[in-house]
Length: 270
Image (tube, rainbow, N blue to C red; front, side, top):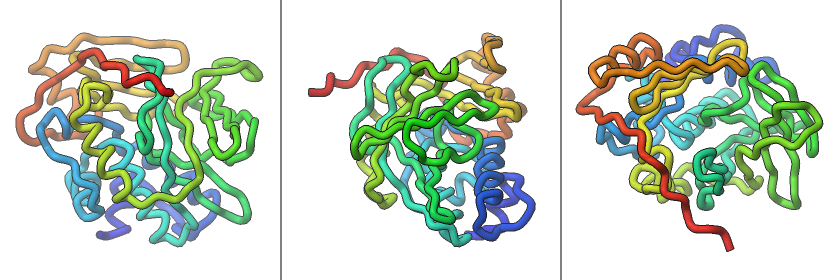
C-alpha cells in the first residue's frame, strides 16, 4: 500500500508530519473526495475488512464505502504518518427509525495530539468536515453545522444542533475502549444483510461539499442540500450509472440494483 497514492486519491498536498493542521486538512480532503456509500452491497460485492482489499477498492478503484472501510483505511494512514490514533466503537441513532444500532454498529477514530484528543470520522453521512476536539459539553461550529460533544460516564454522545445552546439531534454515541478492525467483522456482515440496516435497505452514495453542503444519490433520487435549502431530482434507472460517474466519480462494477426500502426497526433496548 502506497501512502503517496492514497494522498493523491484524496487530493491532499502539503506536509505529512503529525500536526493539528495536517490532521484537519487530511480529514477535510478525505470527506470531499471519497464518498460514503452502500453501493458494493447492491452490486453484490462482498465487503471484507482486510486493509489491502480496502486500499485496492478505495485508492486503486476509486470507490467509496461505509464506516468500517473508510475509517479503517484512514486509521492506517494516520498511524503510518505517525499520529497517535486508535479505533473505537459507536452506535448510530438511525434517523429513519429513531433507534440506536447494536454494539459495534459504527467505527470512529480518536487521535491524541499535543495532549489533546480529537474525534475523527470520514465514514458517516452527516459528519463534521474537520476533527472535533473532545471537550465535554462543548459546542463546535463548522461549515456543516453546530456539533456538540458530551460525555455521560464512559459514554460520549455526538449531537448536531440547529440552534446554539439548544438540544439537538443525537447522531451517535461511543466509548473510548480501543478496538481492532477485526472486532467489527460481525457487524460488517450485519450491515450487508440485515433488514434493520440502512446499508441493506437503501442504495446510496453521499459526498460532502465545500461550505457544508452535501450531494446524495439514494434509490432513484439525487438530493442536494446546502444549509436549509434542499433540492431533489427523480432519476430513471438508466440514468443512475452516469450520475454516479459524473457526480461522484464512481464507476460501478457488476450488476447494480437500486433500492430504497423501509428499514425494519431493531429491537427496543432493555
